[in-house]
Image (tube, rainbow, N blue to C red):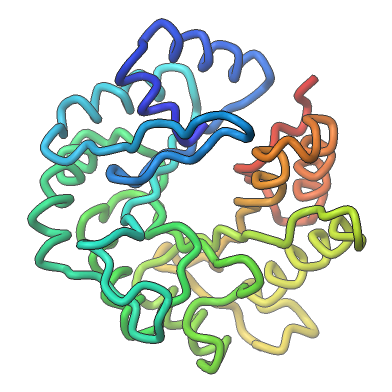
Length: 277
């Protein structure tokens, strides 16, 4: 569904049909963004067109307004992982060119923020960056979207903010100190070799306990967000890739979503519809 914006931009009737079917399955949230991105290939078929809403703030606003009219939540992933906005990708010094971000992306996001067209916003998709560079991004996010819940999304196999050699607890607390409310958790997806389902349950529960400062947590006290509550853990990416590649079906996707929501304190799942037929 992340490519629904490019469908809507080219074929409104098709987009209407997709969104109606999506809602009929029990979906209540749409994930979209960033506003400039390469299109993903559909398994065995050509890729979707690239997304590029730079200079088209009103058009993107109309898309979001259309989506919000049918869904409870619209979650926007804000920053691209592409040059020229991202520099030194996949290195220890991966960071953003903030002058370029402000010139190209800020004008669109200012319109979106002023009209309150999204309910949640996440810095970017699954990047591993130093806490210094993440702090710059979190500060930008808080400045651009001061009234919207803000989140961070982990890379697969790397559950915490910061670089692998940076302290996990310090990174988590720094994330909260810089205005992040939610941790959008990506887990290892099913691969048919090991029991990833049980691993998913344990991972979500462990992260929830750490952020909430529950007894036995190695972090001790809760990691408090700007709203005075512990950082909330959201089951954000569970089975998307194997489902996208047609290696698992909707029944398994829904089973994982139900499992994620069975974890005490996990109230949002953005990957999989628990009750989809």
